[in-house]
Length: 129
Image (cartoon, rainbow, N blue to C red; front, side, top):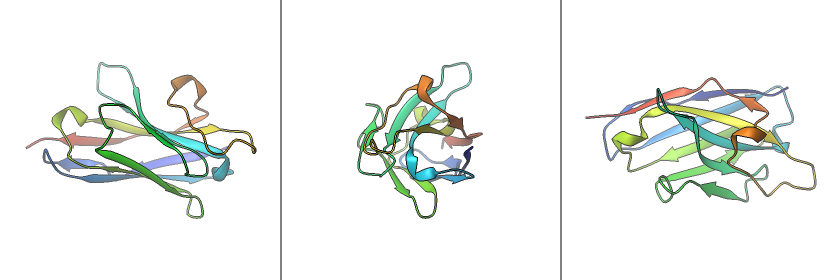
């Protein structure tokens, strides 16, 4: 089993930056791609970015492309989401999620809700002046 814990959320002004972290424990982290989701109260949880298990491939949803960047450190079992040029509409609870891949497929990821094996509990990001 893999446990995930997000951190780094908080209050930031529009145009500012924030870095979220997702720390894993308890499992073979290097076999999992990681997807960041976010959810606004009353709305569905949406996938915004993912990174392959070997870190070579990333994908971003259009609304965050060019502003957000994912990276990972498998030795430290950490994944990061660097968020820049933040907008009020980025306000949400941010969740990291893990998706197990076969050993021979390490350079892909999918931003899909139905393939998630493990979820973190989320961290709140508020973008407001």
